[in-house]
Length: 102
Figure 1 (cartoon, rainbow, N blue to C red):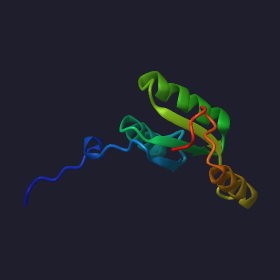
Figure 2: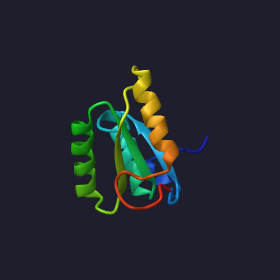
Figure 3: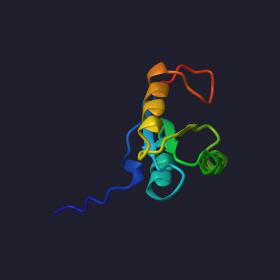
């Protein structure tokens, strides 16, 4: 059986795609954000704590200045938060720049 070790280098180009990552300010969510942004994705960082989310975004942008990272509040336990998050996505507006959210 061939060695099929998967790495983030195996992620195909994500240019033109918008992806929502929950828990994007720490742990696996942050690593997923980092890897997908490196492949060109517009990553919507869904976080409970926007201060921590913005800090994580700033740290990621220091390593990847061209990354397209957007921080949005989302608390999955609070249905009003989920509704507000979904409504924000439905508008198609990007909260971090003047692009049309890809």
